[in-house]
Length: 67
Image 1 (cartoon, rainbow, N blue to C red):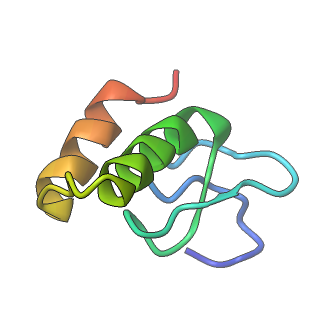
Image 2: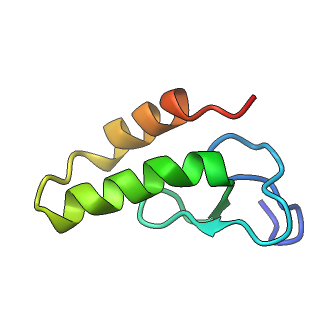
């Protein structure tokens, strides 16, 4: 993904002008919808409840799939 493509690193939909930081789930920018899952994962990590990132990324991708 190039920085100028403005596509979400999780769902490949356009994220608009700026997007959100997708780390630690993905290395790239994400749309507002997928960002909810990224924030949820960050909060889990902050409280010591980090799960396997591969499983979490799959769950986030399915749960917050942009339409």
